[in-house]
Length: 338
Image 1 (cartoon, rainbow, N blue to C red):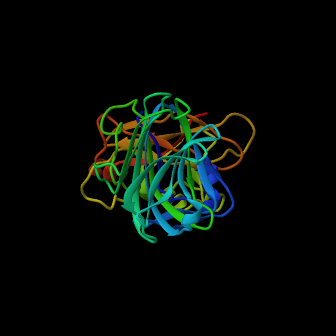
Image 2: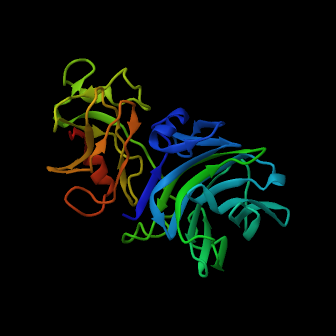
Image 3: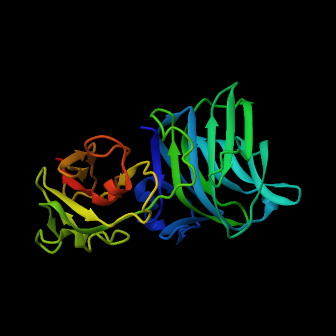
């Protein structure tokens, strides 16, 4: 799969980020998003995530609004990491009296390149980077707001490592930034998700009706209108829920439509939030249904604490790329797997 990370921050609070695998330091909060929903604010703080593999080439995109900065600190925006060590840092820099984008290596002391696109506070920008990791032919390319023309292009680098396996979104000393609409791609798949995606949106949608299957039992002790128990914007834990001890018990739900009526869908992500309530192995799978065809994800082993279990799919049930109509007509849900 080429699409390895999607995050819009719409369906969870800052306090719940850790339950989706994000490392969070003090000072992180939820804020209004770029196109509705939520963003995450880093204020002299960081949210970081380990990627599902190690990659020699990555494409990273995210929306950012610099709310406040102090250029004297050359603040960080995004770090690409190998383990806990920063390999490439995107920061604010200064050129010709403007605050601009700047790329550094390692701990942020070696400047690799400075752009010309000026940064203004309280304006959303969409930032994309392609980084090739190599001891001899490494490169970094930075694009702003979907442009095909690089703001920064540096080649022939020794990046200090040959792969990366984590990303961090950061707010620097003396300032803070809002982040939204994040993606990370590698080059293992086929077009279009093995390249720059451009200025994209990550939109969350929620259940609006019952689907083809309703065999889980709700916290209201029945299986009627189960979607009403899982449609809250952010999870409410044990206030409302659906459950079953029975393997293969399943719910699917109708969801609200996407806001755009045209455009490309690069992938979808089903994000169950689940726990088990007793000892012993128990798991769930995500389910996507389109027309009469269903596809299950790999199984997720549950613990006795709630966690998110995101599943990314670039291919719709039955094959082929997702379209907006496909997403709007599909059902999504979960099934007990053990």
